[in-house]
Image (cartoon, rainbow, N blue to C red):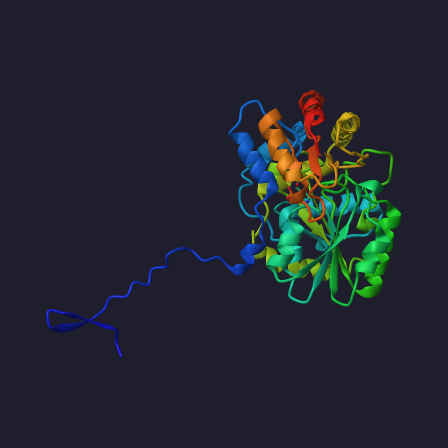
Length: 407
Ligand SMILES: Cc1ncc(COP(=O)(O)O)c(C=O)c1O
């Protein structure tokens, strides 16, 4: 029976309004948290005289020969799409670079170029996460992993790292966390937010156990060159026999200060790359073309620029470790890589409240620990991607302010 309304003795069909009152998102969107970093940075944007130790990207300039290569590519008319796997010259450069660095035979078909490590991680996780599959992730960890796993129906199993242990990952705890539903382990060394660099013995134990159990490893190695102490970097590419269950993910963003140029990659078995390449075509299709030319210049050019940047980060690390040690109520440690330190406040203190108050009252912006994990609500992330003078200025404000706090 049609829906009707009576008008002037006549029966007419009633008009039904089908307009939706508001957009309805896919329920998986619920898995995306309000990022703690944004909250702080948005507030800071409304304030004057803010000192930022909150930044997650390099502040050092991109080396000139890389910029020149980018501009040259534009001037040469390189403004079209590249091949879907990436610019052939960049695939060759990466093959040679990694092959030499880890003494490992790779082909171009082991590599897919992506729009930053973010796309690489997005492809890896969203192409594999599904109900019934469990992913082991450190707590704290980079804020992308857990929401992406959950958005796609997978389950996150956290393995904590602790300040008492310089936030080192205990391979036995990772192995103990593995069960019949474990699908993958996500590694990130040097780590964001802790700066911890895992030694070869840790990576080898986890790689070996995963190979034995058929568990995947997604290794986020974006900070692989920012090693601040005299130690050999333990990439999964150095520690694994074959690439069947390994995806090594990295980018130019941190090593060469190229975060905005958006080029990253995945290195894995040829079969994995073949599948990811198809998926990549349905997401971003290809990475930015002139940026890929800039990437070739970065890999094939003089590497002194990287050593110079690492020396600067080391000097800042030493300074911030010293200043954190002088700060009342903060417990620090020695981060070995990247450009982050993640000191603790006393156990019961809510880092989020404190960071907000500290921003309002001192003008220093850091990121609260709850942005990175469920068990790190009493931590704060300090970025030392800022000059020594800025770090000093921040602590000139923080130290007396913290001395007045009564917890
Ligand atoms: C651990 C980690 N992985 C990945 C990324 C993203 O890197 P990209 O700029 O290559 O997308 C970041 C950026 O902060 C990061 O800290």
